[in-house]
Amino acid sequence: GLVVTKSKSDHGSTATMSVEDVPALDISSVPSSVPSLLPTMIPSMLPSMLPSTLPSTLPTTVPTNAPSNTPSTSPTSQPSSSPTEQRDLNLMKLFLTISTEDDLKTPGTPQNLALNYILYQDKLHLSPDSSNPSLQQRILQRYIL
Image (cartoon, rainbow, N blue to C red; front, side):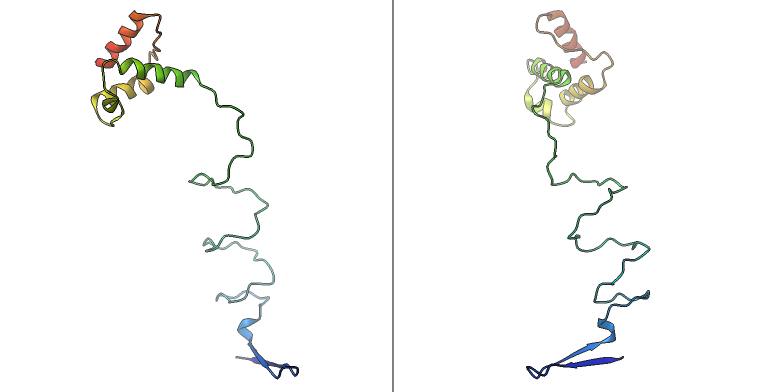
């Protein structure tokens, strides 16, 4: 290949540069060691190995599979206790009167399966009310069955 030699008379050093080290303006099938002067018209098929130093200006069109490490810019001021969360807690308290916490939390145990059924699949969606013992008994019967 073509080799260009440049002499520095101040220090007596010589720099050598080959054609492969100069950015090309035309399309090449072989990657160069020096970045292009102009952006490509067609995006590459493979992702880059290193992150970009500049953020992109356009949003991505494909969602990511993992959560970001960046905190939200608009968090809620105070988390609220939703009715569902309160119902779940009340059901857990009720079931703890006849089952152990380990049995309720261990996946695959009959107690855990019954708990998950009542929490997420039961069409009646019963919620225990401490002032209604007959309702609590009905929920316990559904849990035991």
